[in-house]
Every structure is written in structure tokens, then in C-alpha cells.
Length: 361
Image (tube, rainbow, N blue to C red):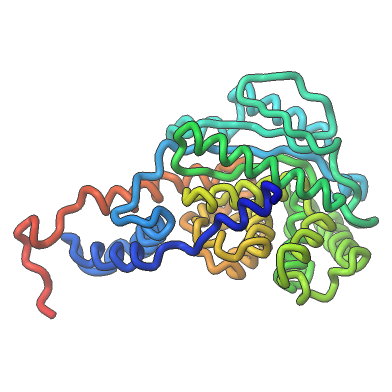
């Protein structure tokens, strides 16, 4: 059995008994029932993830930024040079990116994983080399990856998740870096949800109208040339899901999907970042539908495809600040909310314990 097969086989549905206990416990706390809104749902989900009520606090937290380049960059879908991917990896390693600042703010560690940067990167603290290749092929001309490459990137994500959990981290946060990766994300979202490229393709780093129109057509071409223009067969099991991921995904998408699967297999919550994470989670869900129960949507990005992905997954974002940076920034900002939801379950008194009268039924 391969690591991917083993991981998928280990994923179980979130625990319905623990979730029911968590919901009942929420109703006994010294507050009006439902007063904490979505945070109550998060607490219930965390209980289902861990299989116990109250759920453990989601700390320490670990951000993993998966970095890779994309052959579709050659189609002019972004004005940013491809070299920026490698330069930003160096910036992460030096602690100079927004993700680093947010990670320090919330007390999360930062690990950067090279799964496909189109350059040789020097060793640096916190940088792991799991390079599958020097960038993907051009998804608008044929498959971006071979199936074997997709599996290798999935395996990298699983192993990074296992390593972080093995050292004691109890909440994983997805991060990404890859110039042109919103193009691949839009293609994945269209393939897995059936939405039209015009609805799912955003402006990424802020392209002008002409480039945006061109980007939409490139996504449309990618779906057509890879025989994914007609959605429907892509959710028929792991083999079909892997074909879609290899056809129009990126190495970082596959690695993030593996990261989600690894967290779910270990019953550890994973906070998803933006559109890249959302599209990767679609792949993870197609590979193992029960994995979605272990995900919390950290935020909703300004990319239109992200809302489509979250709706398809049945996830409600915790933060909506019109972010479009990636790196894990939205997931990091959401972590204190996830922690607060769990802490309420541990520290808030019940009506009986506090001697407070409950509302008459």
C-alpha cells in the first residue's frame, strides 16, 4: 500500500457523538444559546475532529508554505516574473514576508517547502526541499504534471503534515507561493465544480482587464485540451481526482491536498488559506470526501473562485477582509478565532456551575 493509499484509508468521518456532546455543552454555557454564532459551529467541528468534548486547544500551530512554479506563466497570465517565486521563498526564510509577521503575531511556526520552484534554492533555516521538478508543464498545452509527479507532490504534503504533527503541532495552516498559481487554481475549481472560467477566474496579483480576459481564455483552453471542459466525471473517485489534479494543478496544489489529507488522517484540524488552498481542498475532498470535515475555512479571498470552492465544500469562511495575498496570511489571521472557539469550551462556566439561572424553556 502506498503512503497516499494508507493516508486515505486512515481518514474517518468526524465523530458525530463528540459533536453532539459539544453542541449540548455549548447550550449549557453561561450565554444565550447560539450567541457565539459561527464560533459555536467551529467548536463543534473541533470536537468532531478530535473525537472528544471539549476539544483540545489548536496549539501549537504550524504554517507550511508550499512553493512551486507553473509552466502556464509562459502564456502571459501575470505581469510578475517567474523569478519572484524563488525570491519570495528567500524572503520567507529570512522572516521578511507578511506571513512571517502574522505568524509571529499568532505564535505559529513557519516551514517553507520547495515542491517545484524553477530554480536551485540555497539551504536555509525552515526550508525543506521536496522538489518534484523545476515547475510544471504548461497546463494550456496539455497536462501540467504526470500522475507520478502529482502523487509525489501529494506524498510531500502528507509527510510534511506528519512531521509537524509528530513534533507536537496541533493545528496546521496552509500557505502557498507560486507566480501564476491562481490560473491553475481557477482551472481546478472549474474542473471540480463545473463553474465557467469567467466566473471562477480572478485577477490574481491585480492584472488589467485585457490580461484578465486572456487569463480566462487560457483557463478555458486548459480545460478543453485536457478534456475537462465538461464537468461530471471528476468526482467519481481517487483515480479521476488524481487525473484532474495532474492535468491542471500545480505542485503546490497537490502538496497542499496531501497536507490536508495528512492532517485528516491524524485527526488534526487544518485551517485553509485562500483560493489556492480552496482549490487544493477540492482535490483532497475528491480523493477522500471525509477530509473536508477536518478543514476550517480561514477566510474568503477576493478571488471569485474561492467563494465557489468554499460553497462546493460546504465551508463558511471566518474572515472576509478582501485579502488576495496568499502565503497563509488569511489562515493565520483566523487562527485566534479558532483558538477562542475551543477555549470557550474549556473555560466558560455552565449555568449550573456558576449558579446562573438559565432561560425558562
